[in-house]
Length: 266
Image (cartoon, rainbow, N blue to C red; front, side, top):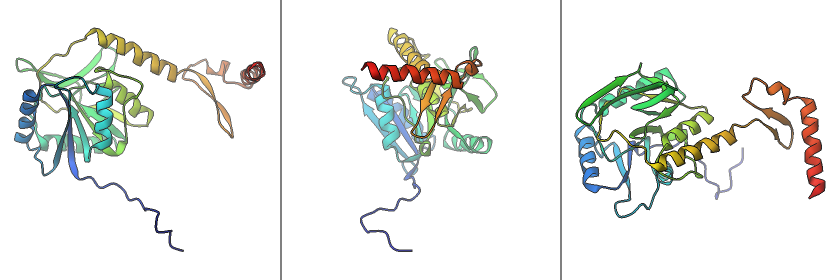
């Protein structure tokens, strides 16, 4: 076969410069330094890890959604750890994490996201984490497949090529959004038994409820029942058990007639 013109660049599968990229949105540098020290002490040294942060110590330049998209875009590690500045690795370290990730690989090749706390269904929250006062909380059968994760400690496979929504802004529910994006891309989320200390119980500010409503509206609209027209075919999408009432040739004929009339009225 002939040679390709020399201005075209042949791509290869990515080779990661680091095993872990550890990414944090920082508002208090002293607390962040404490977090960094605990990671180094537990084996996450700079020979296998890069440490990336975005600086909100003077003002909120970045919200969590824009910050995490930047981390996911620029991180050079095979695994991207996105964590709060107020965590301390007081128990498990890099060897334990490697073992947990290897366990996930054997269980589910399509896992894309994991963390230390999350939820499966309503009234089934799972966690493996230590809270203020050295209160250790452990509930679940790990690794536990979940639908959402807590934001204090998240690990994303770099080759999953995930991002959070660009049309949401704020500091809440971005891990839930990431899990939904992962599910849309055929990837699973898990809680693993990796114990660290989170120095906060978390709190729901008024912004939390505003963002929850925005996220709910976004995905409710996306998952709505609808006809999809392509250049070559048309089909009906719906998760409703009554989809046969609408996704049939008669309703398609009606929809086409309505759309035809709309074009005439313009």
